[in-house]
Length: 252
Image (cartoon, rainbow, N blue to C red; front, side):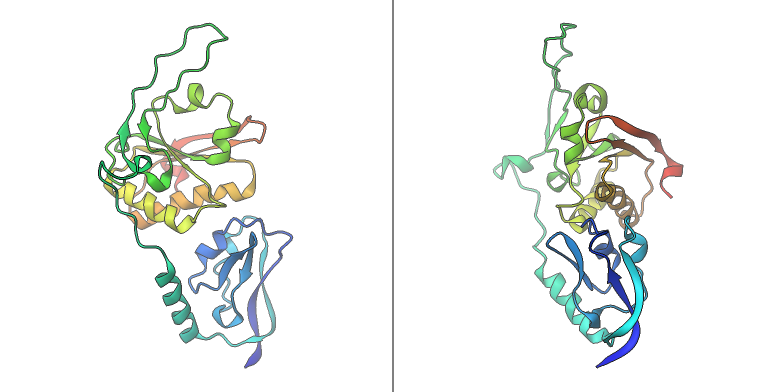
């Protein structure tokens, strides 16, 4: 039955598909469809607008119009279905499992000679490097300076190894195309099992990439810890636009 009430409205021209509003909706009323946030059904939206503050583009507003009444029972059923549809947690494999998942300490190559023609030496000190594959108890993460690096930033930075990776641990992720909830869960497990000393988010200048910062903050809340947080913003041409050192006052 339709009635005049408040309900969410999404401006698709402004929506960049970052998915942060979906995480912020406790009723599960929003979903990504063809790269845009969509209202799953009017009955699932309570019209309170908790998702609005999560949108970096201002694409969400609350309007008053004729809409189906909010149905709390339908929301509970929807959330149960969403929970049941999630894949089972992936266990950290033993040595006979997939090599991509096996925790491994690497020995970085010695610094290259001063010859400008020589290739830059790798400073990568561990494996794996994808956030979704990192073991929550990996010893190389504990007490480290962790770079949470956007996939695109890794490809854009010309001096990634020489300037950013040396002496750091690294986790690669994409807040737009990956599952943010899965990343929050994995990072929270890391913060409990092998907490790093600091975390620095390295993200692109595009708005959707700021989702990495949100993932870190939500993971710290879930883990019940506070870790000094820094941020590096990268332009699409590889220039560093902003650099904020990890500090406790960046966690708020």
